[in-house]
Length: 124
Image (tube, rainbow, N blue to C red; front, side):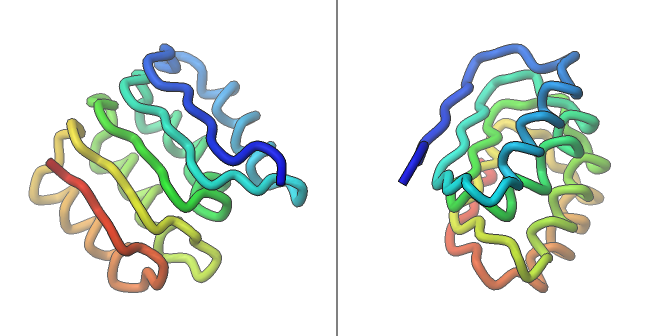
């Protein structure tokens, strides 16, 4: 039991990398059993995604990053490494509204090759 869904949408985390790091630490604790993390339109940038992605990937089945337009290829490379991990639990990943060009798509595809949990991916 415990908290199953955490929605932080529309909060401004553009300069809150430390706060996202604390959230990541909490997500990685043994007592957390979060199924869904919703951080739509939070102004998350590459540093914020790097601070958050590890815990989110191992704890959450649904991860919604929609509308975080400051995430670039670098941020997606951090996410790609996490979804490639055998400990990744993400089944549903939303990346709508994130500018994904050719380089970012290549980085993301590298993570998908080794992923065993993802069943739904929304890019548009």
